[in-house]
Image (cartoon, rainbow, N blue to C red; front, top):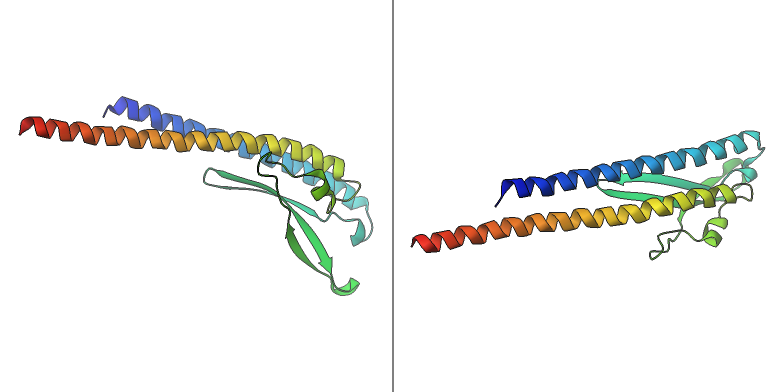
Length: 161
């Protein structure tokens, strides 16, 4: 096995992982912008009825980015309200949330900002998916390279016998 070739593959993986870091940073900027908008509007609002019932979370586990919207449903009497989080389904093919699904939880004052943010997140999700596939394929190429080395060692041992 050529150590230089292996180093190239490992460098490629490190570069791709840095791309994931950059995408995560972009997602956090988009989420922060959205939350700043919500905070500004809610600061002027009165009563819980005018507060957003939509949550945006951006998490990273290893090379996986989880950029998702969650709805909040409130129940109970006004002085003793409790909330539950409701999963909003994402279209796996387009990697985006449909406006009608988000609109179920979004307030009228926030839907345009939600859709603007979702457009940014969709692009990040799509890029991330391709980069993760590239990482997986590069790791598989390393396995092939290492398996090839094993075959070369076996061939050398047979030649000695």
